[in-house]
Length: 347
Image (tube, rainbow, N blue to C red; front, top):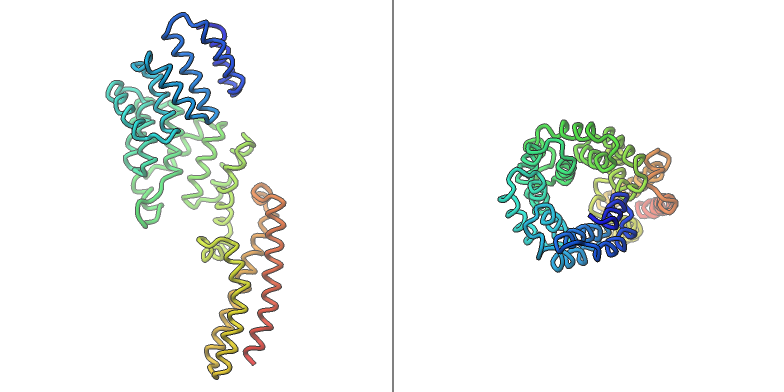
């Protein structure tokens, strides 16, 4: 292998993908034959894929690599990965099935099979594939990461809750997670996946610990960890979890809009009911309104209190903090106004 090619691969290992691309270009004219040239293009395509330029990587593979390395296992494995990231799962699955037939003892292709099945939401079949990959290569970090990804993404195929389904299909899921963490304690991706799995299993203490460990190992993971930590925070606070229940599928803007509209609507209904002498309806409307507004106020107060927790310091920006404070203040102001309106309507 020529020196520019070696230097380019070293840059890729260091994560300096943009710097590696011109070095790959420099290495191409020094290739001794078409096969070596195709190997350089294959590594270059993999580098483009690392940069998220999957279309370019796929085209480079088709033009420069496949004519010479269509029977090379590792090259075709790379091509399948690029196809998956390009959204061409059908073609990727067809090629991977050929690789599985040709190399039945290679765990790599079973990992890809599991990934494709996971994307089709065939979680039980995906679990069988990843188990076969682990059997063929128990020490494969690639297989272990996909195994945790599968557990973290596991969703029910019906309205049945996720916990019984996961327990039924993977009764030893916690042992799988702890084994992965023990094998790679300094891998932030493994820690992140472990935290997400524990969060889904409603074990907030363990979830928070793994998520914070992932953040400490690699601060760049913060955008991925924020949403998981928010979910963990609601699990840790029963009051907030109870208050969140009515609003899980309602955006905050709608919830706040209801607080503005409901007092006005209630006042109109109260006046109408009072004019007709329907005191029972008036009373019920007044009671419902008096219950709704403070409930929303307490909900937003919980959001304000979150910023004083260690997790809140991580997941909330200054903009989020001020927005929560203003919403909380607005809610209690509306509560005061609405109380006056309701009391007047009840007289």
